[in-house]
Figure 1 (tube, one colour):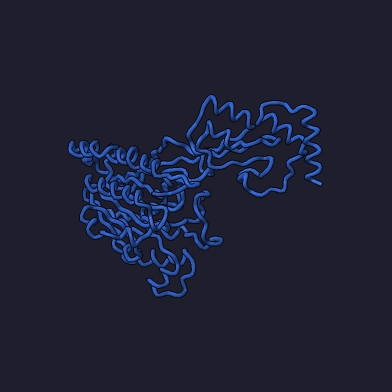
Figure 2: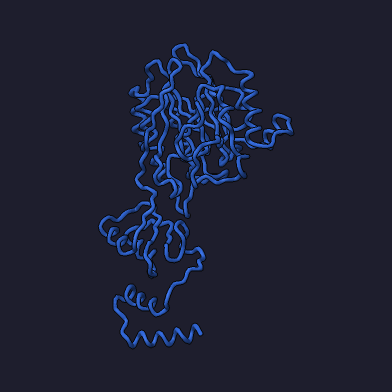
Length: 395
C-alpha cells in the first residue's frame, strides 16, 4: 500500500478501535534482506509489509502488533532492509497502534537499539536486552490491563553473566532463570502475555532454520511459559501451537524448498473474558517457492504451456543423461534455483554434488548428445568414428 493511501485511511479514522476484546496481530521472522541462492527476497518482503500487512492493520484495527524477532536476516543488515523497517516503523507511529517487538538471534541488537527511548514515545517498543524482559509494556482496554513481557533472544553465556549463575548451561536453564524472576513480580490482575524468540521443544522445524546447538540443548520447555496467559513466539518458520498457550506465526515467506506446502501469514488473536480466539490470515506472494519433478521432455512441454517466474527446484526423473537441462529449462522457468536428478544424484542433491553413479555407455551418450543438442541422429560412420576416439581416450 502506497504511503498516500494509508495516510488517507488514517485521516478518515479507519484505525479507530472498537469492541471490548483485545485484538493482536502476531508476526515474526521477517528476515529482511535475506538472500536465497544469491536472489534477494526484498521485493517479496516489501509485498508482505506494504501490500498485505499494512492494509490488514488498517482493516483489522488491532490494539497492538507483535513482532517476535528476526526482523533482519543478519546482524549487519543491508541498507534497503533498514529503509524497509524504517518505513514500517513510520507507518506504525502514524497509526498510533503500539508495535511490540523483540530482537531474534539474527538481529544486530546494538543497531536496532538506536533511538529506542525516543521511539517509545510513539508506542514503538523494541526489546533488545535481557533486562528489558522485566519491564512489561502495559496496555489498557475497557478497564482490563494487558502486560506484555518482551523477551529478546539471549543465550546461556549471556544468562550466566546477567543472573550471576555459573550453573546455567543450556537454553532451558537460561529461560527457567528468566521466567522464575518474571513470575516473582507478575501482576495476577493483568492478562500476562510473553513475547519470546526461542525453540520450544516438541515443535516442527523447517530446513530454513539453521541448527546451531546439538541435541536438545537449544530447546526450551513449554512448561516454563505456563504462568503466562498467552505466549507469542518467533524463531520457527512454520505456524503452529507450542505447548498449552504458545503460538508461532512462522515466517511470512517460504525461505526453503522444504516449506513449499507450508501456509505463510500472520496470527490474529482476540482476547476477552479469559478466552483466546486465534485465526490465521494467509499471505500469498506474487512468486511462490516450489519443487517440480518429472522427465525433462514433459517439464519442457509444461513450461511452454505454462511458463513460471516462481522460485523452482527441478528434479529430473529421466533414466538417461540430459544435456544442458538447466539452460534449456530456464527458457520457461527463469528462476530455477536448484536442480537434482535421479540419474546422477539423489533427490534433493544439486547436480554439482559429486556422484559415483555411472553415466553409461559413451557411445549411447554420443547418440543422445547428437539427438538432443544437434537435433539429428548420428549415422553409423559417425558412431564408429566416435567409438574409436572413445576407446583411445579411455584406454
